[in-house]
Amino acid sequence: MALTGVLRPGHAQIRVLDIEESAKWYENVLGLVPMGKDASGRVYFKTRAERDHNSVILRQADRAGMDFFGYKVLDKTTLDDLDKKLQAHGVKTERIPAGELLETGERVRFKIPTGHTIELYAEKKDVGNATGYTNPEMDVIDGPGITPIRLDHCLIYGGDIDGAREVFTKVLGFTLVERVKLEDGTTDLATWLTCSAKAHDIALVRHGEDDKLHHVSFQLGSWEQVLRAADIMSKNRVSIDVGPTRHGITNGTTIYFFDPSGNRLETFCGGYDHYPDMNPITWTWDEVGAGIFYHNRKLNDAFLSVVT
Image 1: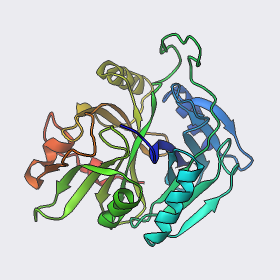
Image 2: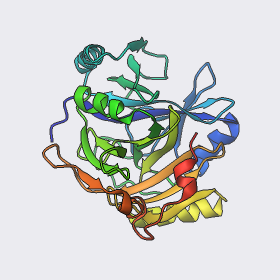
Image 3: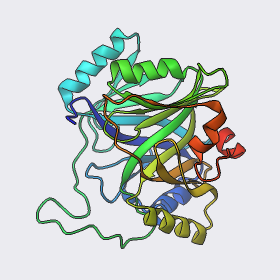
Image 4: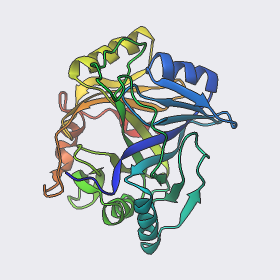
């Protein structure tokens, strides 16, 4: 499909309790590439396969969670156009100047009805990936840690997921891929949205508190790499929430685990292709267990309730 608006998830700024411990963990266990530190002390990383300068920013704070999640758009004209459309929809926007994040251009920042801060940007320095642009060899995983392919998506918790979905679908051009209904058969408990042909680029779950993070997800290339990630987690005594297992929703294979500050992360692989002409899939309340964890068809209480 031709991507002409929002292209993909671009970056997440994650709050950590100990910046030095977390930086070592994200490099050596998760296997991200360190890309520097800014004047405020934030630490920057990218995945091995990403070409832009950074996708994960760690910030020292007194509580865990996520400050914002950013999406890259096609170009500056697209950024300006989406800014106007957001304002026309009644969304207040703020322009963050180029350079406020390392090697990143001007950003349009706004809050969605669940209280989360979302950003759009068009420019981030292209530093290349592990193989380069000319006569590239295959990228062999030979470094430390899990070494994901890319920042894949986030799942966020908040109250007005219907209003948030409208911002993503009516203004930003996302499409609805899957949904879970509550017991009344009408109200959405959760929705999965995409701006591409992926199974999802963000997911929203209805929750009593706004601005909560459930997880930030990183893509792996195969089920074997998911199992390799589980071995690395066990060897490094990483706290695993759920997995390795499979989702019914999106069909992806997964492990949920926690960073040293208690932020839940995911390694995700697979999932089907979705196109805007496809009808969304609906899961009913009585089958939500299979939707989330397809193999044992049961929900994990901690998985539903622990957020940052």
